[in-house]
Length: 328
Image 1 (cartoon, rainbow, N blue to C red):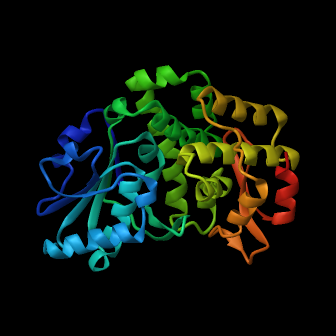
Image 2: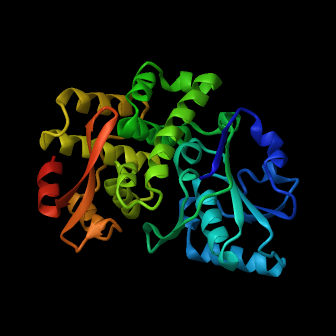
């Protein structure tokens, strides 16, 4: 498993975590200033650039620069950069060593953690990818102070997800906080990041390749990925928040989740300024979900239901039942 470092201002000492030898940084124009000391390849920022075309451009750049299997690649940026970096590193010359410095809250609590790397295909999320663990993930809360509020919120959605999946104490900590305090209190933020990361890594260590328990980490993502495939109006965390709220409603209607816990999940998402629903037609969402990689034979899908604050379960559900449980 990866070494995960959660420490304020650790990015300023990145060289201490890098191996000897040639290091090539992959980054985007938003944070290119963080890797001035390293040879770098700059990619376009944004989920729409997380494609095989971008990966191919990086592979060609590595070949043109004569990068060998002994090079080390470090991805410095948000989730798009770390996803692409991991995918490129895992496939270039059949695999080279790599590490991450995620610069967004979403990256620090989710995208850069766990060893899943990939790119989108024809609008569908992470359809092409690998399982490969970075040598390290350096999470520096100090890097988040310049994030726009909307980008910070999209990361909070994944923090809430982690809490619902496996840490009731983290959920209570979030309930006792507010958006402004999380933005301004570095000590609190570091604790929140640490707890969210611990939820994910505890599960990944038991099921690295998503054969069973790791599927729980997809809470909110079935509808979330469908939303993202249909509209560019929603950031990843916003789509996941709406998907999580839908999953909570479905769980309550299926009598898997209490009305009180359903209310707590919705209230916390709303307090952080995250959406509970979208205006996208349900029929369109269902059509997109049918193309989800978790779909089984076209008639059913493995879906994550929250069963309490800090617990959830994965059940196989047919699309007819899904439509009934999710109906407005």
